[in-house]
Every structure is written in structure tokens, then in C-alpha cells.
Length: 235
Image (cartoon, one colour):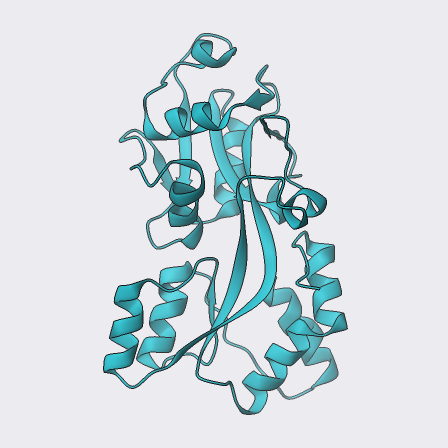
């Protein structure tokens, strides 16, 4: 989302440049605490430990919700499995269920792909889908949504998760969770269980060009772009 917003903003404001590092929510929040960025991107709220670390440095962590997202559970396009219960999702990702035959699939071991530990989606999925349990020891950690989708598309035994913007990539199929599928409508109506806000974090009220970019993100053009990419606008 943010690279697309930055391009649109630069088209209107020649001479403005961006340095964007998409390395996970932990990195984005740490950059605000350390003063190395003006805006920290995060798909989760700052943790109490991060809030106190910021406070110790005289930094006021200000969250701004910029869009909503759903975390889609995806399997290989050729998988016979198309729906799972919330309990089954928890059991698969925690490693209680290890064979597809236990959930109506073809017999064979389940290959689990998750984000890495610095990712907000990694921790959000644990909170939303796994009752805060740890991932299966066999799960493979990926750097981003694109990598998870690419691995699941290549692996007939694969399962993973991704944001709404990545769920229609070729080679993967979105799983229905107890009859609910991730979409802008189901996220907005709070009918899809794995939905969450996404944030910009700033040190207090943003100023200068950063403030203008936050306003642009929340304005008509920014929110239309969020919708086009696959996020759910805040208004």
C-alpha cells in the first residue's frame, strides 16, 4: 500500500522523496522509538514494552488507523480442502493436526508457511486464530505475503496466510472459515474472524511533509488507492 501511496504523492509533489523499508511491524515501531523514521508502518498495535521503551526516550507513540485488512488463509489451488473451522485452523497452525486427511484433504503431511517473528501479521494471526499459542515447530517463516503465497502456490500440501491484497494471486485458493470468506464487505461488517486495523505510528502529531502524507493517505485519493489495492478504507 505505502509504495503506491508514495508514488501517487510524488506525482503531485515533485521533489519529495521517500525511503521505504517494509520489514515488519516490529521494525516500523522500533524506527519511531529510535527516531530513524518519521512514519512507522505497522499491522498491529504497539506492545506495552514498546510503549515504555518509547516513553523512556521521550517519544509519544501516536497510532493512526489508515486502513483495515483481513488475513486470508490460503491453500494450494489444487487442494480439495475449501473450508475449515476456526478450531481446525488453530490446530493446523499450532501443529496438533499434521495430516490433511484429518480435515478432509488427501492424505499427506501439512506444510505450514507463516510470516517471520518481526511481522505484525505473525503476532496478529496468533492472537486472532490461535488463542495466542505458538506456531508448529515445523512451520516455515517467510519474509512477506508474496513469499508465503509463492510457496503455497508451488506446494500441493501447503497452507499459509496473507493480506487481502495478496489473496487472488495465481496458484492459491482462499479457505472459507465457518462459511465466512475474507472480503472488504465481511471485514467491514466484522463477519470475518481474522480482520484487523493497520497503522501509521508517529512520534506525537506528525509535522511537515510527513503530516501532509498522513493526510493524503486518509484523504479521498489515498483511501481510493487503499481500496483498489485490496485494503478496506477507514471511511
